Image (cartoon, rainbow, N blue to C red; front, side, top):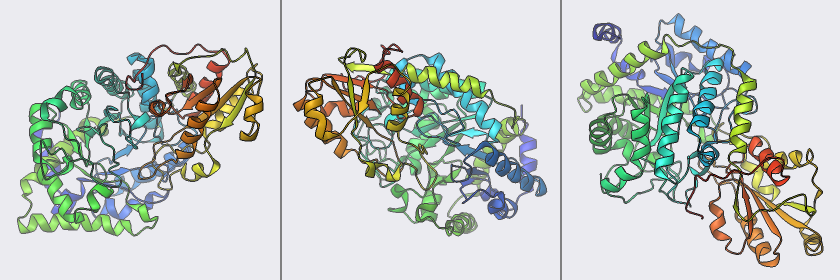
Length: 536
């Protein structure tokens, strides 16, 4: 138990600038901890958002995080809250870490135990890297099939299943002895927009939200989640003026009072389009603190791929200092937030064991089993060994141009899901070959036409899918023996009323592409569960 007097003694040592700096989670460019030295030494930075841009391997993560520790030690600072988007469909250290297939595939298998195990692996591996907070799980429910940014990051579209898996994910992270963060409160699953670009709206009543979007967050809170991340979404039936991040009603009345959450509330990145297109940065920071935000995050400052954003971040800290000094922002708000932050750091970050070896073989096994549990024949089904298979990638090469996000945020997957699917086919006993569109009419008389589709949820961008969807629509009209292998969520199936055979992996991760090939070859049995009901 952390004594109030201990917390007070620490806070008392800090200047106003250092107090406010402790309430910021900032990003910095590159792989050198020295980039953060001034923010730690002068401003007493509270945390960092770290991405694939900061480290691509565990060795780089060790060097970075030990460098940060050295700077903290030199200046006698509390540990930084080091947050990473290791949530499955999004990841860090991708290529070396065990991302697993992502939440949607876990929801299909509908084994909460599997979800606990996968998130336990996340915790072990990220602590080995030197990180101490996973910005997950996503507690969003896929109510809107056109949502461009959640998709496979959600556990599904059924509230009770998403709630069970959200709670299981929190338990798994705690078993991995790492901080858990439920996001994007009060829910990003019923929007058609992406808050990286602008402010979406959800026109649900409070009763509707409680029965649906809020339920997984309540489950996460009941499971003891440490942190909740807000969304920049407008809920006009709760607050007609302010998106959730800036809304006292949503944060203080709904989250704190009604739902009983007493932990850390962090904002989603305050540099996302939803905020910067509508608010002055300092104005937004003041409103966020007044609304009830505990820590302000600017995780995606380098949209312009320059280093000037470091100055922009510090300008926001100075803006809050001036707001307190002028009386615009009550210092009591700062003090209350500080007490929560310091308590969390003393209770959980200071004693947290980092750099302990993780069991990567176990992580690989859990990820493989989870991926296999997510592959389902949503329509039809074939025995791939009965006839030859003629395989085409429905996604044109041009669609892969933004597969790796230049800011290091998102799937960060270097190779297409299709390439992993083809590689897996090479290790099966199937009679198959890649072919071209020009040969389809003739080959369709000899076997099955297999079109492979995929999708990747990219922040602030779209993975272009229109050409692939048009090809599937045309071929589903032309060929009775068409099979679509979907290395993605199943929601585009709504566009294919004539399609008879649809094998869905609910993921574009390599292990899911491999599992889909194995199911097609009857080497692995397709899953029977389903995390989605809206496409049935």
